[in-house]
Length: 166
Image (cartoon, rainbow, N blue to C red):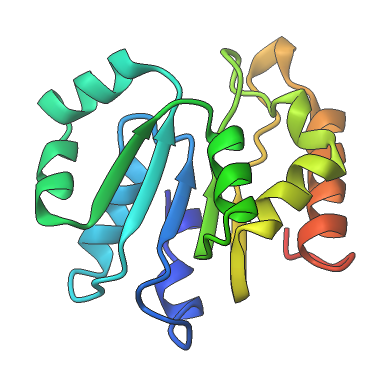
């Protein structure tokens, strides 16, 4: 999860009320890591998780409830892509957006190979904001490097003006 550690320093010059969004909150590991690595950073986080049972387990067993009660994390149950699209369309601005969604074999979702998906993500960024994405190839025989590369190319076009750090 060290991949997700850079956002607070990279976002230091941005409005501290602009949150870090986590698409694919899961058990809250990314949010917990950011809170633990940067305890004095008060920038809020908002995380989307599709599966309410995962949110329940994370609240009960992985410390997500404490992050929510502290005001550091707002949890949204539902489609992360729809949520971030609505946020961008409504003028919501995120300092950073972490994309950590994948299928049951830990592969990139085909939706992430579409430039339109990344444009929706970019539309919710504040000026100077950053996108960090986990573009996993998957595991074992089900690994799909081509899918991960296609997602990285789409992200670079839509979020980085054709440039990206991979």
